[in-house]
Amino acid sequence: MGRSFLSVRPGVNDVAGRWERMARDPGCPAPLVSPRLACMAKQHSSELFSVFDDPVETSVFSALVELLKESEAH
Image (tube, rainbow, N blue to C red; front, side, top):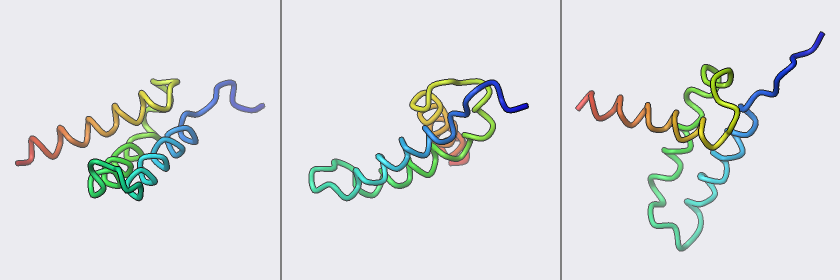
């Protein structure tokens, strides 16, 4: 039997890819930050795939978790 639910991981990878491509756009306001946020978005997609069904929500939540971790470390 196969899985009865779809994983958000492929969607998170798509979102992160768009964030990475944005860094190459000449009008990007934060070209150095975009790839870093993309990496953060993918950081927790494996753990969160059973909680969220929206790839954007998963990406943002994951990036926020990583930003808070960094903030608390400083």
